[in-house]
Image (tube, rainbow, N blue to C red; front, side, top):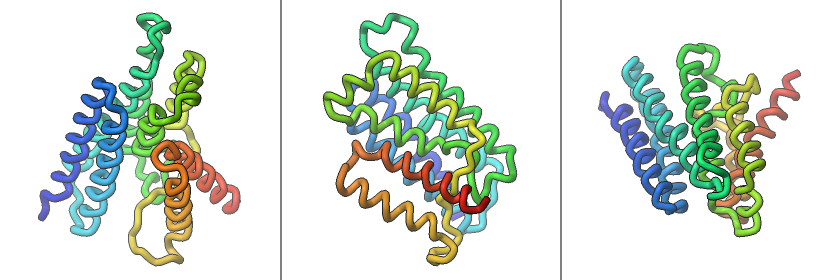
Length: 222
């Protein structure tokens, strides 16, 4: 059982690697599915480690390496593939700044002992979920999203949010009581409602909801 968390982490990494292949083959729905599955494995590897009381330095490093692939490189490739052919040869390479800032965000997280009950900056899984859902939008929205200035804005905003000082709540359940997890349960319930009506293309709204609720909690604390 002591190897279960690392096994789940490796499954996360495999999902990210397969998802990249699907992006390169323009199979965006399948790529998005593998991002979502990678998020499930990423959640349960930490949950399993806490439940089994396993604190492994190797597991911590492996988790970050897997996240760089699944939630850093994969969304960067998604953005790279979204650029129109008229953008030139080099401009689409800006997309990979998302991978670089994801790696930086994960490195900071590994050495910052204060980010346990909450996060500073947008977690890489949330950022990957948002970006992987962009190619699933309707034709009219996609025409707007794939204009160079919009893509540059998305890349810049995504990179900033990853390393920003904004404090966001963590979806980590030490128990499942309402009192201890009000904000988490509220977010999950609202997310289910948003996805029930909007389905996969509504995922960016869920991430916006996550940021909005986190900012609301910080304002109430002050």
